Length: 191
Length: 191
DNA sequence: CGAATATGCGTACGATGGTACATACTTGGG
DNA sequence: CCCAAGTATGTACCATCGTACGCATATTCG
Image (cartoon, rainbow over all chains, first blue to last red; front, side, top):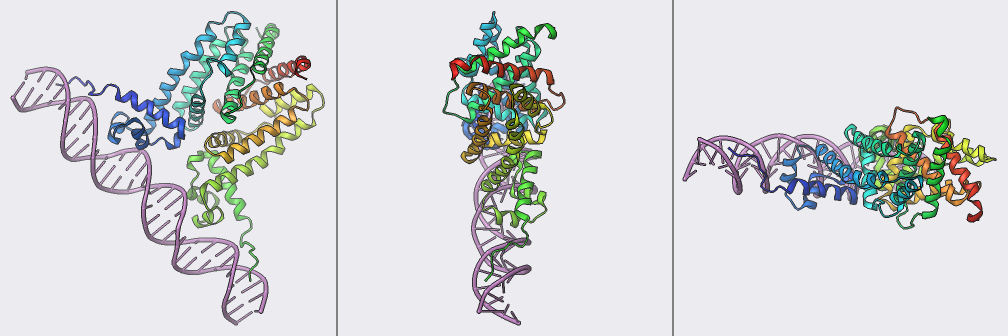
């Protein structure tokens, strides 16, 4: 009897990567079995074999996106010690070294939109957001954490819309500092 | 010779409204000629007659959305006199009386995503954003205006994802106040 | 070495999409 | 009243989609 070892172990992963590429370039609506197969350089039957329906494929692709993104953004924030470190990490995540690429933002936006109609993907998004909030709450009040989270998303969104103008780092820094400072002064009635 | 007066002058508007309804309910990917025609209660040929291709129809629909939304959100902000008024207006626009409905947010998100592939729609979005910034800059520094704008969008987005929990008004108020206050203290190096 | 079983693939079908276009209907001027 | 021209519609074509399914290939065990 056969063990079930795949002939090409990379294939599944390659399909998922191709799916994300297609979604980033042309949107979820363009992410068809055929288009993804072409992108991955595998035959149509290969994609339907690994993912019995399209919803499964897309959700799986978004899952790998989350798994890839989460540690990348979480780490610098987790290492922050002082409020200043937190602000710096936030700035970096918004428009600095650890900031997502435009493709990543597009992907995340597509995910967001797809989540409006897919409970599974909505769950992924909430997981992602909750993980971010958990980290932020280690140094900020709940309110400030939520505000910071929303602001970061707003700026990412802005970057996606205005591809060419970079966000001014000083402005971003000031805004985060204002929110983080608010957290400090608000801490008494909050706690 | 005939004057060119339409037999049913309402029809064009009705089709555009139906398009927005479909987009809000099922997303742009579901906005087909046939689906929109069904929603508007008109035959397929009627939609293709008024809009020679689908892109035109969708862009027109988004244009009417912008025209409808813009005055609604601009007015309260324009009437704000003091910084406190501005903060109150922002809170109201985020989660209060003048806040967009969930449908409006969904529509706006669909527009955002569609804009990623349609230069025309991207232009509409930038218009909308710029109009908002112009008003905000009457009482805030450029940096604060941008931060406030991004934060509002982030919270709208949050509301779309977490349909059921209302944003805490106090938290929203504090965050906006922090950003507006920052604008005041930052005003010297800014100007 | 078969034979059984998992892996991988090609084709076909029914549904749905945008669009083209021939046809009808409505209107107002002659 | 009737015809020209704009308005409105029904149908049909071709492409593409998700999915089903039968067949080919590879692998491992007895």
